[in-house]
Image (cartoon, rainbow, N blue to C red; front, top):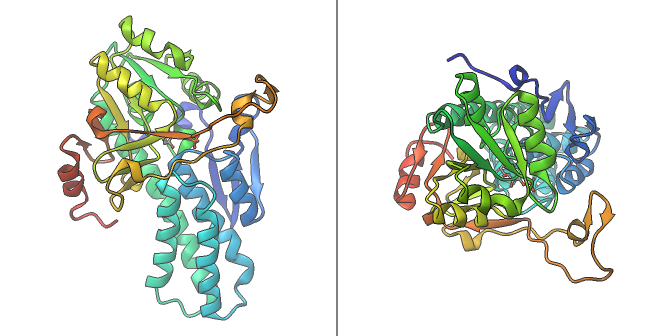
Length: 358
Ligand code: MRU
């Protein structure tokens, strides 16, 4: 099979870097408008991550790597040591934009570790080397997507119904997505299948983004609300679930968009395989258990409003955890760029990373 890309599916790229300039597709405007917004400062990139203009674990990591370059490029007149301190400071700043997706921290660590490892004699050379590293992270993310696509496509049998939650698509990455990559590859192999996209309250990434990108690419997609998931499973429409993830930890517990845990529990009840597509950049071997994953709490307006319109009484108390953690025993397999990892996760994740540099 020849390599396939987003452009073959008529889809835009969420991140563009050219001649030292960063453009992000403003995903808060989708599906109505497609606007590439130029990022002029590191503060703007931080806000774009917080406001979900760029979102999805891998895309956040790539955007932050370039964002760091934007934050340091006007400081190359500093002394080398002062410049290096500034790079650390800016990386810590960008890392603070959102806590749950490990790719953000992973990308910042990778950039600063690279800086410490190389022997650049001037800030200007260091800046060039960091741009190259950011470009490498971006290129690697593309091939991780294709890898997951090839690994996961074998699981998609002709005629199946697949449920997905949130958007782990091309928009959330640099290429074919994570959860959607097996779907794009299966589609290009001519397989017939249906995708059911959960709308994903409160911010509707399933409706605004997944339904949009799959429909645009020609994949058979049906939008449902989150509370229809059980009914769809009970009535035999769903043969498998594939979701993405913001962080898989060493015991195989999986953080993903709020609502994923409910879908996993339902899948267990109805004996439906529950797969998680995750590139190695989203696996955090330094955290032992899912309960240690920091869960982002977002503003109450995201609960009390829908697309800017108030739907709740004034001053109502709210909670807004953006992610939940699915325990490893509900996970049938982790679709990575090279293999499907299955239980026992502690041993098999260790084996996966043996020989890989992390
Ligand atoms: O809040 P978001 O939209 O950034 O949440 C995104 C998700 O939960 C995705 O499923 C996850 O990041 C995987 S993206 C390939």
